[in-house]
Amino acid sequence: MMIPLSFAAKGEKEIIKANKLYSEGEFREALKVYSEALALNPNSDVINFNRATALYKTGNYREAGAGFTNVLITDNPKLQAKATYNIGNSKYKQGELKESTDLTQAISLYTEALNYYRRAIELDEEDRDAKYNYEFVKRKLKTLKEKTKHMPKPRQKEQPQPEAKEKPQKQQEPEKGEAPREQDERPQPVLERDEMSEQEARMLLEGQEEKEIGEVITEKSKRPYPEVLKHW
Image 1 (tube, one colour):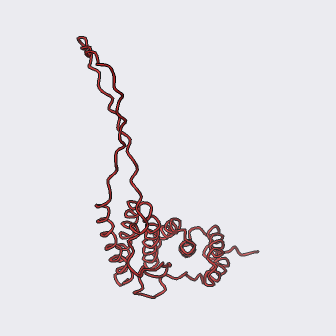
Image 2 (cartoon, one colour):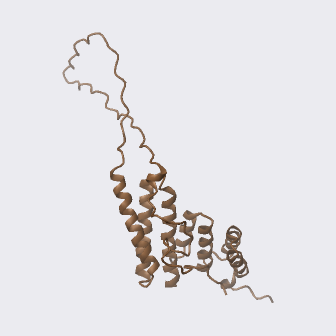
């Protein structure tokens, strides 16, 4: 009689292969194999975490954040803290991509990142990386919010002047019981806000570099956090 594969072991072969691909820098191939493993064991915290990490490495920050969110229900407090920290990183990277085109949306995403860093600190008070990122994003938000105060306000499109007409006749008085006719009060169309230049919109600190997951936003710390998890 064949012994059925235990639930905990489902996808183990796939995740070992995916971890190897990930360690070799083959993030897209690793992502495919992590997805195969997740199909076999969709409730695995380890597979969900590793797949989200691979998504981040391929630049898919929105899906990465959603993947890390799936890990938040874990019973492992350390893994929950790591997932929370990485959601903050994912939100930050999304905000970075929006900064040159939609500053308002970028500020919203940075605010979400800040909240996740705060939560990560609550889960792990010794996490100096989360504390550093929290202060970094907090300062950045303050700068961007100050910048929005000096942005030009939306301008209204000038309405064409009516052509000269003959002397208008005396307006007919409404009959008794009839409501007077009101003027057309449709809102005037407005121009869209002018886009800011890339130099104006990007408020990154001098010397700032693109950061990968597993690193804080600054160069202060070099610890590889978080790493892809093992499954054996």
